[in-house]
Length: 256
Image (cartoon, rainbow, N blue to C red; front, top):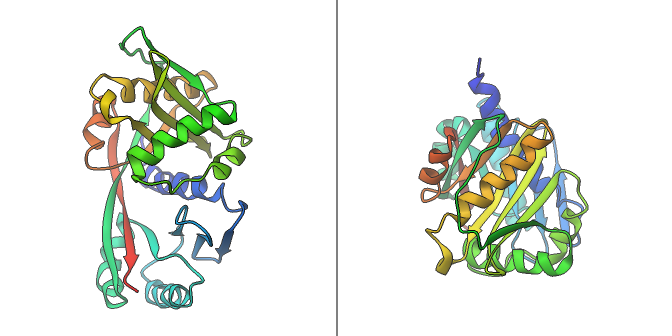
């Protein structure tokens, strides 16, 4: 039987664990206490998030005030990822501290043990990233399609290539790099990240294909639980694959 609270917990935990694989990268400040943690890039704007897993209604106000002070002194990033259960209690108090909601991600989950088929052009192939040149092409698509800028830097993901919990995939159409995905596995849950397709190659099934490819690779080694954090545009695509929404992650930004 599906335990909804467990799923909601691991949807958030996988996101937190994923960002924390970058905590020892160059130019990163990492801070943690019993209630929240953050990673703050002193040189670039990614992956700068405050992440919480143990804040509750009992200690909410104290933590909001503490985080506000850290941001004002440039010790913490101004972006805070908050799960939907906490956000209900969070909204009134966080507004008092000049935090504004800017993005909502749908926390989605799928349990599947059978490999899936996908139909796509025979000229479309998928490779696991294994070298720097492939990684450059992968990163270029992610930056252009997801971030619209060069927020993600090569050295973050060069280190991630060595992490056994991370696999990155690059899709080619007629040998041209066109689509990306990343699979991160933690605590038996596999998270799907950085799914993107170049504008001119959309609506051809490439994004779906590279997502299913990552899922199938995880199934091959016995993983059956998958989570992701979908934008409003991406949510219907993942629902067609069988994913269901269990919670939301709200991104708040401190007005400074």
